[in-house]
Amino acid sequence: MKRKVIISAIALLIVVSTVAMTGCSMFFDLLNNTGTTTDNRYTIDVTDLEGSSIAEIVAANTINAAVLVYTNNATGAGFFVNEAGYVVTNSHVVATGSEFFVKTVSGKEYSGVKLIAHDPDLDVAILKVNTLGETFDYMTFDTSTGLKFGQTAFTIGNPSGKGMLFAKATIANPSLSVTGKVDEPYNSIYIDSNINHGNSGGALINADSKVIGVVYGRIESTTDPNNVYGLGTAIPSDVVMKYLDDHSVSYYKAQATA
Image (cartoon, rainbow, N blue to C red; front, side, top):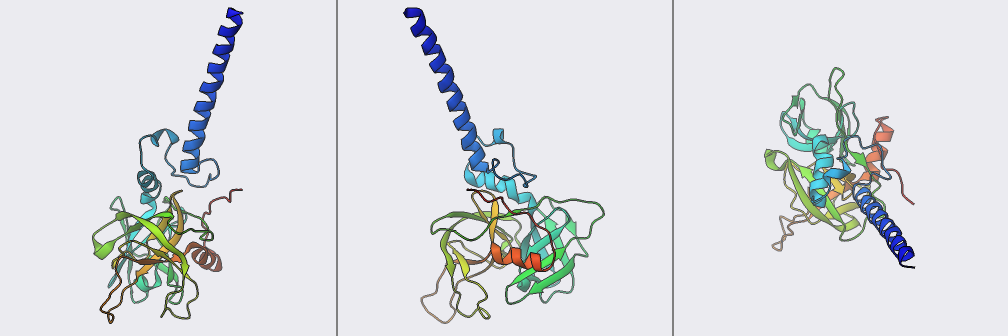
């Protein structure tokens, strides 16, 4: 009887250990979405996740695909949507420019960037970095449908041309009309983050390191003495993906989960 009890105890210990290890692995896979998304080629290794905050993980997964966007008379931000050097930014960043430049977080700058298309009503623009065989890290899109109040998000921008800055935000309202926007072609995503000149065109990213929007402005009133501060707006990712589709520009989208 004693021998059987000892063997049973050992077997139970093995089962518990296996479940614990599997659960831990599943947790980290879920955190980094490695179990459902295989198109993010620069996702950090699961072993690097222990001890890291969500913000650190998201930053590590996206920062190399973020860029600063310059024209001869404006400054903004953007991000690569594929390895071929296509960049998304805001129309108002590039609309009045005649020369376009892109700079990566590593400091590498590209001149002679081509403006592929821009739409002032949507406030979306597509640029193309001209390179010879070079490939780029890129960000992966996720749908903006189903965003929730209070959801954690992050922005990468270039406020006032100071350089690349990564910031945490919260979804203040996932879909709200912006009064005064031309024909209001979509409801904007509101975030509780201080958006400044130069943040325009930067990615709005969820906790799975996927793009859910493109930052384009902030809510403020110059005529009302009770000015509104600390609220930014973003174009829903579904609007941006459709614009890329309309111009036959490839991009990557997270696989839908059940």
